[in-house]
Length: 305
Image 1 (tube, rainbow, N blue to C red):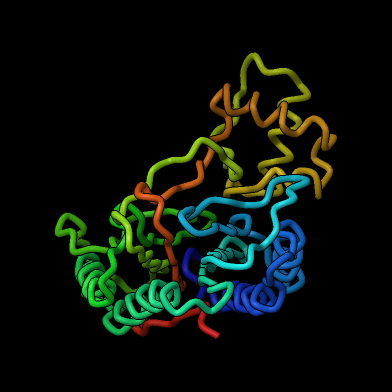
Image 2: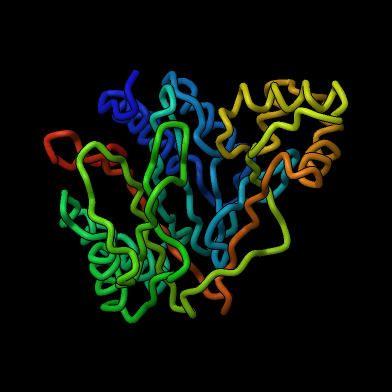
């Protein structure tokens, strides 16, 4: 199979669309994050796709990278902004999409969602071959600023390659002239504006719930560790994962997962994705779609319902 397969991208997109629909039905105050996560991820599997990353369920000032850990007891609160970010792949061809839920319909919080949504729509309107990446950022920034809000400057979209979630150029959410590459046919992209009334900058938090295998040690490694590494590679394809998938696939005993994750971090076998927190602790919204440009130059939004 070649490295750009429209049908496979669309198939992955349909799995994400189904999981997003289910998430909207499941998210309500008092619901367990863990149950929502497992049901949404299972929905992707039911559509004959695999996860390209674990579900992100990031609340309020947490912009990204919270995924429920094993035995998580977090519940959906009565009020706030909950960002749901879902990813699938079909034979390595990735779909990545996110949306934000206003948990109690608060009108001021809705403006934060609407700003990111309008920013995404503005970018999609000019998503065609020849458009420069900073022009997408400029369109996003203008829309978000028109709501009296700020885009998150150090988060943005990215190219999607086969089995590679964050590949190639960065799509800024502001007019940053250094990102002067042009959109091209035969390429897939994720475009993801973040909006906030805060500073528009995220910093790493102290906790990580998502990891990725980055290399395989070949020397001086115990057989058991090598066995586990091989299993992780097989089920994740070196894409980001939650330790929950290690338990679900019985890669190792559940009570040993934390120990081995820490061991592999220490040995630089895996990397971690810390939660990202808006530095002024203001709420953040996120809206995201995957857009592919086919070989004829036509943009296709694969994750749009």
